[in-house]
Image (cartoon, rainbow, N blue to C red; front, side, top):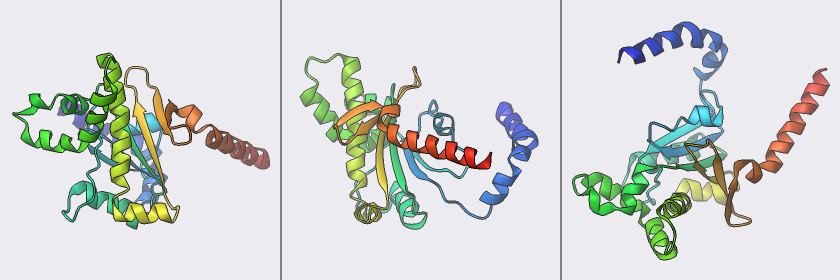
Length: 226
């Protein structure tokens, strides 16, 4: 723990003073650009991957980046989604899976989870994705099956997300957009689901139009300032 304590001290002495204005602004409230749902895996660093500052992402993490379908039973994920969409009115929701996901390996081989009953029950929310892989994955290598499972699980959780009332209303009002991503730990690459082509493509391809528009706007602002 001493290393973590030293990290806090460094933050207080070096990082915080450099971003003091940011934290002063954040002390009055938050207006995140996205609800970011990802895995609890310690290798996933959301701020590093997305290059965002505090206040830009409302983050929910759990084993397997799972979103249970909505029920009348209150849970942490359900309440947090409701708050992010209903109160904070986030305009984007991202569900991000990742390679080498222990949760998805467990979901694929649930017989090995007998000593982890709560984990086994939780991963039941990924069963639809597992069933798809078992049906469509005949002849695929284990690596290809796992990649398919990662993608199908994200797509399944996006479907679960739509059952939450606040999300359903926001979608009907076109007030929120849903995004499915898979992060590759080894390469740093991120794939995104493209609804138009019903396929997974590199993130730079999926958001090419938005990136180009943002770059054009930045160029215009820079030109105007000059």
